[in-house]
Length: 131
Image (cartoon, rainbow, N blue to C red):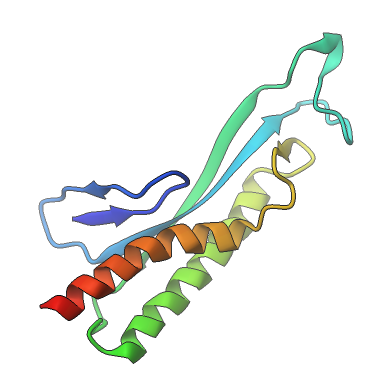
């Protein structure tokens, strides 16, 4: 199965073949404003701006790793962290903060994305060591 990590929970997705991948998701909840106003959460006419969940995914393969070895497990952790940082950079480019204003502006995107994905990666590592 393919393992996904998301903002709320990770879910396995069945596939026809073996897929040794952890998916890193960089999520953000944002106010979408076509006319940005710094520090404002309300658009013209007193209407609340639409709230959206935006995200970018990056797949991290562990097919070449022997997760029973601590060094390879650490390599998977580094790959997850690198993918999380990359996904968050892309999220910022696709959804500029002048238009997509984060609901939680001080949230660390890369730490959140990596943390969610590492929950799954750690389960995969534990399973590999049980064989």
